[in-house]
Length: 284
Image (tube, rainbow, N blue to C red):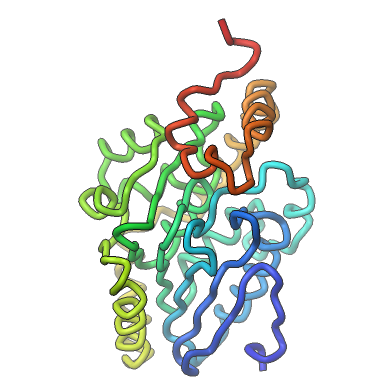
């Protein structure tokens, strides 16, 4: 069986019941999303796309401070792009588009920071619950001189509206769970002491419904709220186009010198700090 044979290194997969699975991200030091994690998510999605039993998958983090920090900015992107892509899309877009369509209900249980690609991941899931005290969300790519590559510009409007999407993407700042709930960025912010119990109770309840009705609900909600899949690859192309220009690596190198992708004050406060970093070619 897949649940017994699959041995991922970037997250733990647990069968709570045959109908309810949990995925706990665990890629120290801050849960960045790199080729290894993308490859393992693709394998999980391949199973979920055909699995006839699992009704709910909860995605959480083994690290209470970082849900998914962001994309791995020191990884070789060619490694991820060399992985199989059933959609034919770029590696990260393939993961997120497929995540939006799996038969199981997907729930992000956000405790800690979910920025950039981490925010894009939770936006691709069906529901988002956040720890009131510990969850932080944001799309900081504007500070790298780039459009988010995983479809945030296409998914956020259905969640928060046009004006707030502009606010989030153009500001590049962090959003607390309280404000994210107010905006519709997450479904609900729950006090941390009650967070795990709430998510588990909700996931258990949903997992016990008839599989047919879950599929019908997902079909019609997706029909009226999701963009066509073909809308997402151009956003990825725009991101990687920006990454190839000199401004992007200039900003990345400055941030790496200050502790990017480590448990540094910079990573904890990246949303605010992005406003203080500019390409070396334009610093005056």
